[in-house]
Every structure is written in C-alpha cells, then in structure tokens.
Image 1 (cartoon, rainbow, N blue to C red):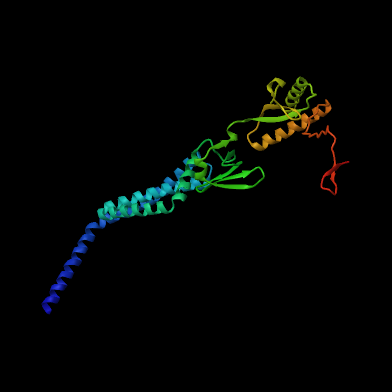
Image 2 (spheres, one colour; image 1 turned 135 degrees about the vertical axis):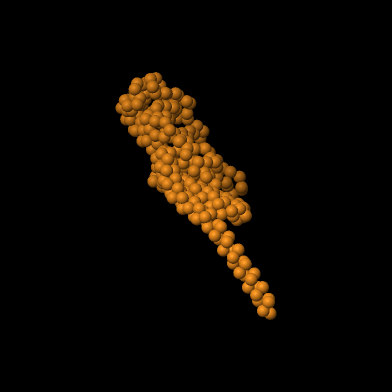
Length: 300
C-alpha cells in the first residue's frame, strides 16, 4: 500500500514538474500572444476610425458607415487572435476554431438568408452613385423622395407625405427610375378643342402661352404640338415642353400652371374645350297599343 502511494505521488510530482516546465517554457510565447492581442485591439480601433472617414466620403448613411467600420475592426481583432494562437503553438485549437466558425457561419447564413440578402443589398445600394438620399425615384409602383438607405430597408416619402419602407433586396431586383439624375423633365399635356376651332390659331396660341409662362421655354418654337385624333366631340392634341425640375411634384405643379394659363387664353379667344355630349334623336312616331278583351291589340 505504501509503495503504491509513493508511486502515485511520484507520478503526480512528475506531472506537476512537467506542467511547470511547460509553463516556464511557454511564458515568453504567452506574453507575446497577449501583446499581439493588445496591439490588435488598438489597431482595430485606429483602423475602424480610418475606414469610417474613408467610407463617409462615399456613403451618407451613418448606419452603413458604422457597420462597415465595425466589420473592419472585427476582422483586425480576429486576425490578431489567429496570430496569437499561432504564437502559442495551438495549431489544433486554431483548426478547430476555424472549423467551428465555418459550421456556425453556414447555420447562421441559412437561418438569416433573407436578412443577409437585404444587408448586402443595402451595402450595394449605398455605394451606387446613381441613388442618393434626397433623390426622387420611382420603383415597384411607388414614387417619392429617398429618405434613408440602411442595412435593412429603403425608405421613400411620397408626394402625399406617406412613408414607404421597401426591403433592399426588392429595390436591387427591380427597375428603378431616378428623376434627380437630370435637371430637366418633359411635361406632357393632352387636351381637345371643338371642331369649329381654327386649328392653326389653337396651335400658335398654345405655344405662345407655354413660352410666356415658363422661363425655361425660350420661344414658342421650342414647344412641341401635335394633333393626335378626331375625337367623339373634339379634335385632340398633345403638347410637350421641357422644364427645370428634379421631382414629380415640380412636374405636376408645372402641368397645373400650364393648364390654368391655357384655359385663360382659350376663354379670352372664345376657343371651346368641349366635353362629351350624347344626343338622342327620335325620327319615328311611337305607336301605343293596348290589348282588348279578346286578347288582340287595338291601335290608339
């Protein structure tokens, strides 16, 4: 019994000595690993600030700018962790960590597929030069001013002051019309005049009214005017001209102003803008027949 105890005690002392020697041997590596992690931490903070400043020159959205800065900091810290594990000769631990990270990343990717798709779509939209906050755009049946682009959704404010929130992935997968990319918009105006009207006079008068109403139209010849059809109660025309505008709201205001001024000019010149009229004409006399007691009809 005493011999077994002495043997066990000897094995324990031998183990402790081995651990002590290993600890002494790895103290420099351990200290170096700690220094690597501390350096990685401060480097991550510094790089995060630099990335944030660089990204702010390209992206206006604070949410996406902060997200990119944080991702860069995480990458630097992760790189420092891998270097520290390598310094401590923990190759197996490093391999296991990478394998575990891969499995966890795959599981998270499958579970958050839609969220990640919106996140990456938000990053792509933020770097697009043709879409900026304040632009007037039209997409997926909605039209309005771009209020925000974040990692989740795309926010529009319509002309009636309603807010529309659209997932980023939907914006990226569908056509988008940006009215703010150009400083000019074309106004389309359709109307009709009576058949008794002098068509040449109507054309000239309409062009002059548009040219006198809008400073962007220098002369009447810049206004496009086309008669389009013989309508049911009027001869219809299409009038087109350019204005300086970057939103649909400005375009609607210009169209409203044009209609008001054209109506005033037509009233002054006695030009009729007819509305549909239905005329019922009875050329034949109506016979009223009443049945008699025998079942036949008598004409009155």
